[in-house]
Amino acid sequence: MRELQGAVAIVTGAFRGIGLATARQLAEAGATVALVNRDASRAPEALREIPEGQGRTFICDVTDAQCVADMVELVEAEMGPVSVLVNNAGVTRDKLLVRTTDDDWDLVMAVNLKAAFNLTKIVARGMIRRRAGSIINVSSVVGIMGNPGQSNYSAAKAGLIGLTKSAAKELAARGIRVNAVAPGFIDTQMTAELEGPAREALIAMIPMRELGNPEDVAPVIRFLAGPGARYITGQVIVVDGGMVM
Ligand code: NAD
Image (cartoon, rainbow, N blue to C red; front, top):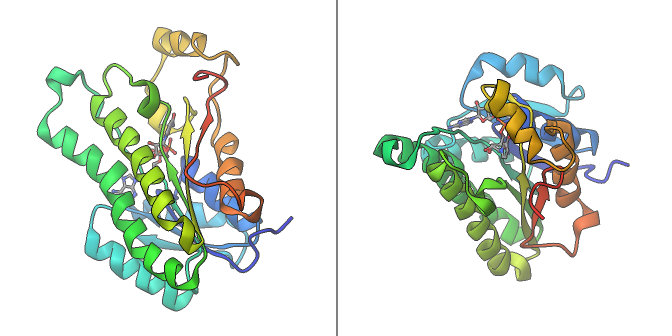
């Protein structure tokens, strides 16, 4: 089914992992997708995974407000009005709370939380005029349950849930839906350094006894973006093999 035929989507952090799987799913649903990432090196490989003519790459650090504003202007001028926004770019700087520096805190907040606020604000203006749009924020189960060594990241991901719900309440009457997905532990570069006993201990906490894949998360984002989720807003959909229930 090509339920997003004609839609234009922006996906941040889209050159690998969950962002790339999401960009591919949205394109397969018929959308043309702006794949946004800070670092250009993986742009050609990422684009090769998107159906011909349905993707364009944009190099932009989501913490750079001017670059983000210029990028949205370019996307709208060249691809058309944006109707789907996926705030997916994320980073971790894991340390025990007492060792977390101001820089560790500020960077994680800037990428995972402030960038989503900023991009939502910019994209929502056009969506409000057109009275249509779907925004999906990629949070995390640790924003719900906390995690030792991730006070900065958990706070940012919890903040993203608050942003999702407040924006959903503000924008619902304007025809815009705002939802979040909260992945559990997904096998990407972000979790690659978890090895040996730490990985085994983590798997033991997951009722389904395995890490998820980007392909387990992307279809949920595709669903939230599309008409099947017409009456769903302000929700956090957990995708975690049963860890949080
Ligand atoms: P990943 O590291 O493979 O992908 C993150 C992408 O974001 C990378 O391509 C990176 O270059 C990009 N990025 C980082 N900072 C950026 C910036 N300032 N501007 C633009 N792009 C930037 O990790 P992933 O696992 O695919 O993570 C995707 C999202 O899912 C993140 O928000 C992450 O916090 C969230 N998440 C991941 C997991 C997991 O277990 N992997 C679990 C819960 C939530």
